[in-house]
Amino acid sequence: MFKLVFFLVGLGIALIISALNLGNMSDISLGFVKFTDVPVFLSIFTAFLAGAVFTLPFAFYVSMKNKKEVSKKKKKVEYIDDEIIPEPVNPVEKEL
Image (cartoon, rainbow, N blue to C red):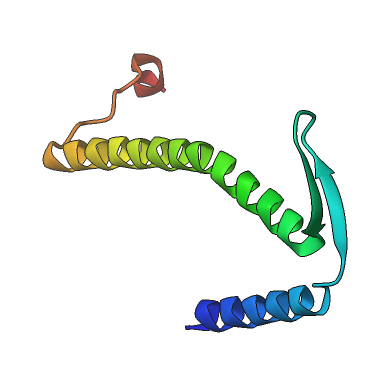
């Protein structure tokens, strides 16, 4: 519930800042194309969105890797619980 409230508050603040800065324009050049009179908040939002999109494959990779590790550990624990495996005895310690 609190995450939703904080998200909505952050979204509201972002909207207020962008509304106050609608008059700030800049030119953006990509080398082969030049965009003129682009609002600054739009270029910042586009950069943020591009960063999020390029981060998604790495986030999914790490998430899947963690799920595999957790399932391996879970299977190992379930296997050990099914059988009682005695601890190995060191013959040297037995004589002491």
